[in-house]
Image (tube, rainbow, N blue to C red; front, side, top):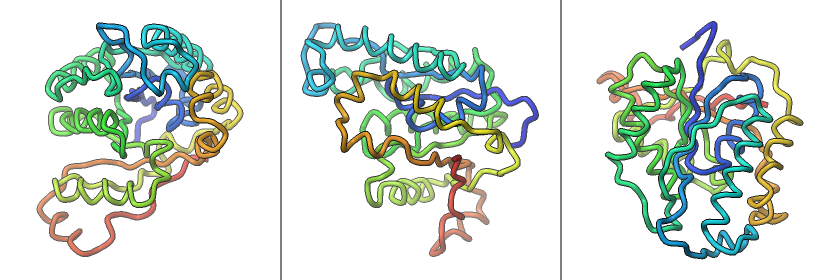
Length: 248
């Protein structure tokens, strides 16, 4: 998957996930496009518990402010933001998988990335939906190197990563440790990521001190590929892959 001049596209479920899970990688590769899926307010204004915890009176105020925070964070990392017009699960207007897959396929066609970074799809229904939509590209976009990042903060929940990897193997998708010689070897600046994360002021408030403690852990990625028949026989009853490559 090595590329001398990689064009990265990072797909983010919510307005903070890409920076939380891939901030070091983004900082090392200015010009990366971050496509966030759930950035639209609901058709009718409502108030949710999470928006209240974030300091907002309602959903309209929340999404307006959160998009501004995201633009600030993405710019701090030298990346470019693309916001898709879908509502997340808390607003009870989740898009169909086929609709989301088509939108992501169109985005890929416009950006023409060499590498697509997608959420592994841990715990949260929005994360799983986006992950499944990206997996639909695995067969149709063979020229693109597809990598999954471990979703922060859900990767810290016991067994979530292992359960998802097992699910992928059962469906014929293998996850391997990426090649260290690729773009992961670039210099990383933790301070740049931390500053970008802190741009999400409303979300830091909602996470609280305990939740924030899990936001600055190492980043981990998995190279995804469709399993050949020999691979399917080989992985039965053995370890799925070597430990994934941390980006420090």
